[in-house]
Image (cartoon, rainbow, N blue to C red; front, side, top):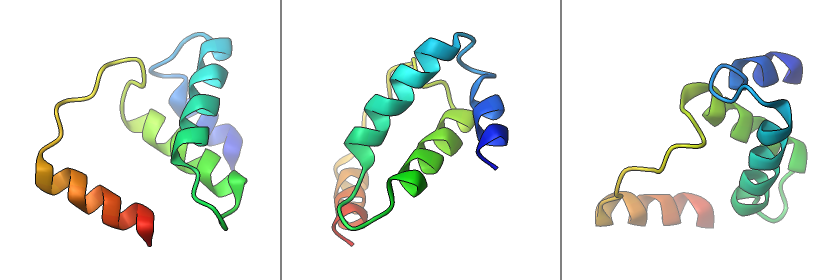
Length: 74
């Protein structure tokens, strides 16, 4: 259920308003056409549960960036 995903994401972001803002921005960036918006939102919350969304990402290698681009195209 989505409530479990939200409470999992709140372990890294204590402010619910900030969580909502970060999740909406990430959902807009990660959303693929012809997919359900709900599925993209759930994926974002799963990612937030595993890592802190407020921290900058580590540099991505060229191979990882290419792999991510292939996943987005699929």
